[in-house]
Image (cartoon, rainbow, N blue to C red; front, side, top):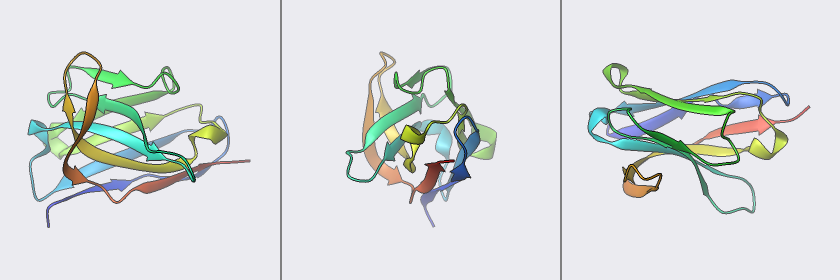
Length: 124
C-alpha cells in the first residue's frame, strides 16, 4: 500500500520533547521534499517545517524555530520532526506530506501523498 505513516505523537508536559516519524510505504521517499503540517481544533492548517529531497535545505515556521528540527534518513525512507521545549500552543494533529520546495523558504503541499496524522497534546 502506497502511503505515508506518522508516529510518535502523544501527551507531554510543557517543556517536554517528542520525535515524530514519517515513514513512506510502497514508494521511495528520496525524490520528494517533505513538509510537516499541523492543525489545531477550530484553526486552519499551518506549515511547521519542510526539508528538501536531499536534506540539504530546511525551513521552519517562526513559531517553532529553535525548538523543532526536521531531518531525514533516506536510507530508512523516513523524515523526522524533533520537537523540544513543547508549549501548550503546539497541541495539534501533525501531518507529513510531500511538498513542492523552492529553496527560498517556500513550500506547499504537492498533494501526492499525505499521512493520516498523529495527535500531539501538550498539557500539564
